[in-house]
View 1 (cartoon, rainbow, N blue to C red):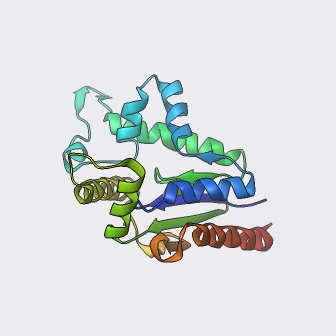
View 2: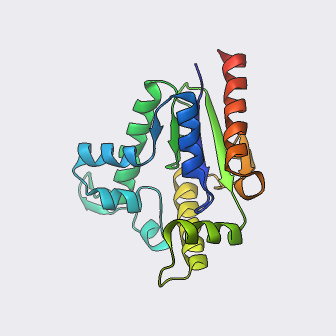
View 3: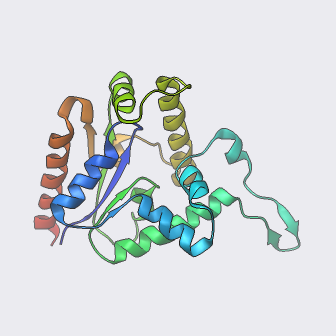
Length: 203
């Protein structure tokens, strides 16, 4: 049985497609937007809101932690609610067996859940990621570099807030891969090799 593989990634590094290819190669489930779908179904929260706030944060949103409504009553920050719901889904899919989970602090959420995990961080230089986003999504009114910086900043704030750890710090991951230097296929193969090694050592 393979480990649960979590993929954290810089925006535009190709982490989503790398994770998807790993899941296909191992014939195990892949969870990214599927987590959004599940949370939306369970909570009734609009999918677009979950997708927007379920992995990102701004400095302003983090100031809105919650406030007292009355004796013993508290208003839950919508972003905290989404995090809690997503964490529940992540724990449940992990219980079902090996899978690939992209983003959403999955590495942190599963660290004490009794599962063997392989935590991966995919990164690449800014100019390479800018070209990747341009080729994949096309140009927009907002400069690609500003989009990249905003996305990375939001993901960093979100991860750091909910985990008390530093997003992208190599100490939080088993593999940190530069997708620009290594290429997509090499990244996939390195993750597969690491998963196989864990499978042989642990199981």
